[in-house]
Amino acid sequence: MANLNIRVDDTLKKQTEAVLDSIGLSLSAATILYYKQIIRHNGVPFDLRASPADEKKSWITEYRQLNREIHEHNLEDPLPKEFDKILKKRVNFKRKINL
Image (cartoon, rainbow, N blue to C red; front, side, top):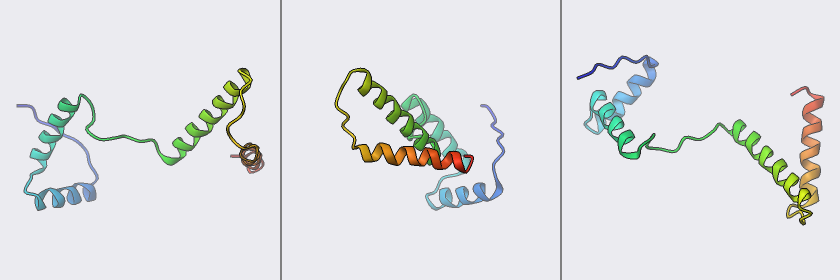
């Protein structure tokens, strides 16, 4: 059997142990269950999401790509022009405050 040594914030460890204790699990048993779930799901057994800032960047990138494709294929823009104006104002504002 292998030993596992990890560094975790003391508060995080105590809070985790309190939750696990309330459901009758040790930290060791919970870790083994987590490993088994990784194997069962062939990955992390829960959704991992980007931070809101990363999501916003991703969304803006998607919007710009969609806009390019619309213009490349001469399609009608499904988004209102006001939205485009708002996006441009935000970009200009960020430039003014050096973001």
